[in-house]
Image (cartoon, rainbow, N blue to C red; front, side, top):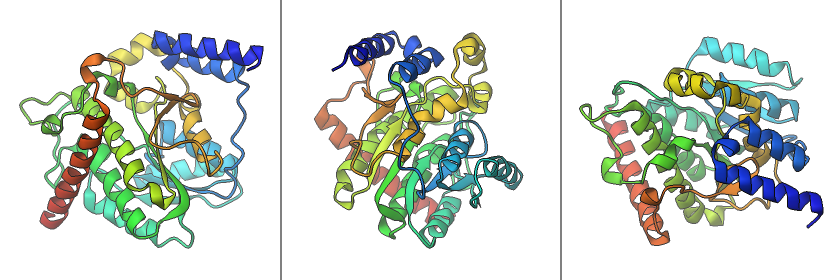
Length: 329
């Protein structure tokens, strides 16, 4: 290891231990400069689907991937916002940019999107689960599901499993889920995953859904390893996005000077999309192009056997809830 690499490693470890240094723009700037980050080399020609692509991290990732030559598909709830997002992304490429209107709080919409993507002329190389919702009050969809859980967990599960089953993902595709530091506060507990109206707290519901993503991704990696598809989690750090402003305004104001830009928050996502097909190893959590631990608090930790069992149980739970919602809709 060179002297520069040794310094970069020491700085990275120090930043990671500090939490604030790691998650804010300080971590991004220090790591990117010391490690001399460059654009990923294998984006050109890859077909990338990004949910929640009309603002924030999703829009930033879409613009950069388009500039690097990806075939970008934008997914969002609003036709007006999709039109605006496509016009923005189109500024960075001479190629076509596709849009798909889909409300991912609704499983019927997610199923329709899955069918649409499976019918594309070429399969998807990267599926990015970025859509999210942090709601202050309990909200139930017309399919009878709590909105946060439907958006962050059930629709991504349905979309991924459908594409896997129907040949919608390329042989070495990547499924990338954008998570959040909020998940570090919660231990996975299937019995507590779906919150009731009386017990509902928006930040808790959000954190539990994000923790569930951290259980689901390793499960997918184990269950579908033979397919060649790999599954990854990305922590963007603390980035200035509409979701942060609307969902946690007090936190946003407290750390505003240190927040990452959406481009900085989306960097690791873009890097994963453009990495060689044989790497990096799936089933991990990434922040600033490095694998990170899934737990920071002892009270949230699951042992390896507990993680395995949790993944199996969560997948079955998702299958049951999705089947029930689609049959009753």
